[in-house]
Amino acid sequence: GYPVQVFTLVSVERDEADTFDRFEEAIRAEPTIIHAAIVAGTSDILFWAVARDLTGYRELLRRLTDAFPTLKSVTTFVMLEEVK
Image (cartoon, rainbow, N blue to C red; front, side, top):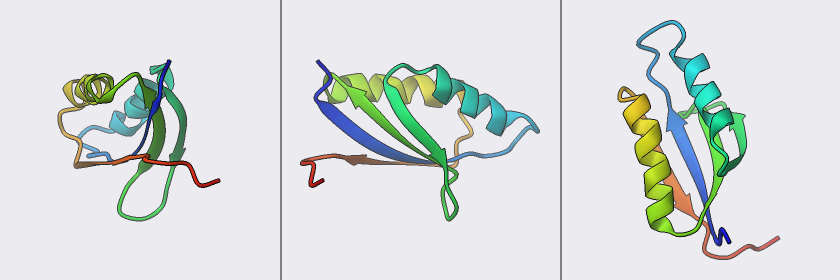
């Protein structure tokens, strides 16, 4: 029922001391995010989410950006085909 798979890189602005921790909790609370990891590099978190369609994914992004308006960047990769 969730054919759309999306990988998203997020950079979190640490405007307050607990912003990163609160963002991690928000990621854990989202049932359509099935895997997330803290990564090194230009982004802070990589998560893998599923959705019924792109509108559903957009709604997930809207919830996250509304809750964390100071996110530095969000980069989305929609999976077209699984290789392995």
